[in-house]
Image (cartoon, rainbow, N blue to C red):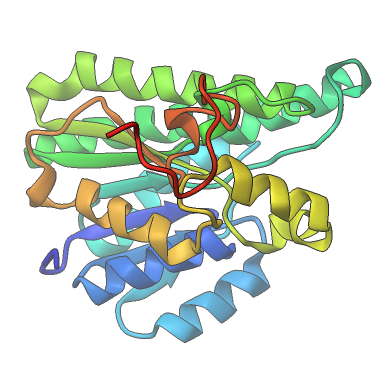
Length: 264
């Protein structure tokens, strides 16, 4: 287990299921956690559950001024900022031709612009400290195209490239930037998936592990990428999707019964 020994982490989307799991995992590993989300009441509940050294920073990440000010607010409260986790996300499920430009822009504002603005504001202070870790929560939808997610996939693909560019530009100055790309995670945002037998069957069929993910299974690699244990890992994307993007359900060139040997 990582030992952050009082290092300060700022987590966006902290009131959500994945954000809350990330905050719990960081706290359990000794980090001081600054939580931000647009929902102040939900943030208060999450902070109360965490206990200890935490502080809430309600903010609307579509507002550049609020977003840019967050790292300075955290440093003013805790004296430093060591870890930034860009987790907040927005998504609409709709065919590309049905997505209104305003919805497209909102998705990119939350999923791509805000991580850029936050990273840009956080990095100078991290360089001054001597090191800093940034972990972006991307998606397998940024690695592979899925129907009805044009804005979300475009934003997450952009976030993956932002991750790589940040590492290339700032890695030599003590900055690590990596991404985690979750598969299907059971959260309130994906609850509709699990109301359909057809959808759950599709998830099981497309995932080699035969199941979907839990929020804490996203939090664990985030902790690793935030810690000194990952100090030679930079600019990479870690798919946490049960193997979904390793292949696809139709990848079998020579179909055979389940359980059959491999011709040996």
